[in-house]
Image (cartoon, rainbow, N blue to C red; front, side):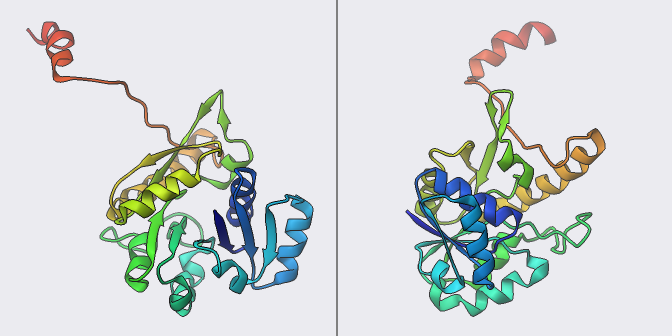
Length: 226
């Protein structure tokens, strides 16, 4: 699969390298094409190519690595025609400038706002819960952490999960696009917790569990409450 990435910040570059290492052809697009060329030259990855936004938008899957606070919504609306019918992987969280809160209300999410602006685009939220440092050292004592993938387009959601094969994460189907409200807020919480306990920014979530049936409850809990 060919993936076009818009933006050469710390998330865009890391995701470009990750997807390239997983076997995908990646165009790292920047408004400053020379900057993109310098970065790809340093990475020296055979599947990673530099370009402008125009070249990145030619890909069937587009990943904008731009903050909402930096004008992402208006920039994407200007690209509406190029993005029609394509999968857009939304990684952004609507942080304010000091990362202390969000600029969106509780009744929506960054992913939903993008979908409202681009009704013909197949918006999938992913990597919202992953801080940039995790891409550099994704292994937590032999445990792969999670990426929660949300979308109202079932096929697009599953395709983004498949794109993650060969990357150092476990991808979970997290359901409808509105669930991005929860995933984004989880990231805000993890930032606060990580700072308090000295983990920030190398931290991530992992959903733990094991197969369970109602009969187990009768067996294990019953004696405790009898």
